[in-house]
Image 1 (cartoon, rainbow, N blue to C red):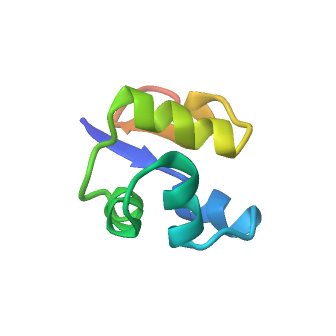
Image 2: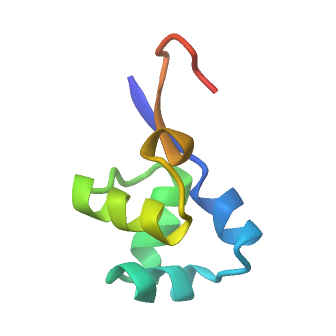
Length: 71
């Protein structure tokens, strides 16, 4: 199974650059870019911080590809 996410879509909706989101959650811009591309799986703590910025539930931002109910 592969972790999928909506970080890029939500970041655009909130009018945030990768650098701005990175600063808000305490990582580098490169980390945000890697998460968006699916090249990096964030820690639980980082995923929760991202969800907090977007005021969203975890399952609305991150999900496992191949699971029933896949988005």
